[in-house]
Length: 214
Image (cartoon, rainbow, N blue to C red; front, side):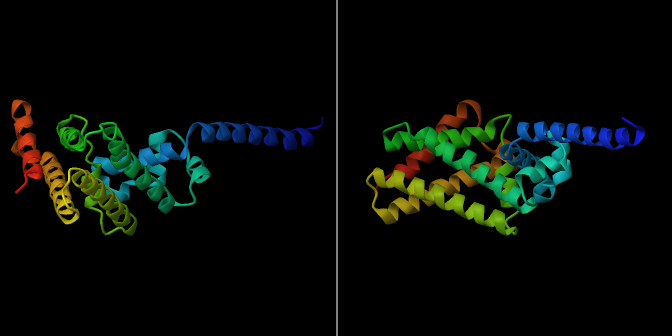
C-alpha cells in the first residue's frame, strides 16, 4: 500500500471508530434519560432556561449528537420532560393508592403521601418551578392536564363516598387547594407547617373537614 492509499484509508478507519463510539453512547442514553435530566435541571430553580442542550449533555456525560438521536429540537425535549413529570407525579401516585379498596382510606393514603413528601429532605420543588413558568404554552398545557386529572380523581373518591356530584367536585377542589397551599408553604416557609408529632393531628383535622357531612 503506497502513501496515498494509507492517507485515504486511515481517516476512514478513524471515522468508523468514532461512529461506533457515538453509537454506543446513543445506545446507553435513552429519551427518558434526557427527559429526567431536563426535569432535574428544572427542579434546581433554573426554570425553562435550564433546559438547554449543551448543559444537559454535560450533565449526562455525552454530546449533542445523543440529544439529536432522540429529539428533533428543544421543544420536543420539553414535551417529553413534561410527559415524564405527569407520569411520575400524578399517574404513578394514583396507581400507588388504587390498591386500597376503601375510598376513604384511599383519600387518607393519598393526602398523607403527597403532604409528607413536602417534609422530605429530598422534596422535589419541580411543581413550584412549573407553576412559575405558566407563561410557556407547553407548561400551561401540562399543568392544566395534571390539574384536571387530579381533581377528576379526587371527585371520583368523594363520589364513591356517596357525596352527590356537585358536592364531590367542591370537596375535590378543597382537597386540591389544601395540597397546593401545603406544598407552597412547605417550600417557602416550612417552619409554618406542623411537623413531627403534630403532623398526624393536622392531617386528620384536614381530612375530617373534607369528609364532614351536614
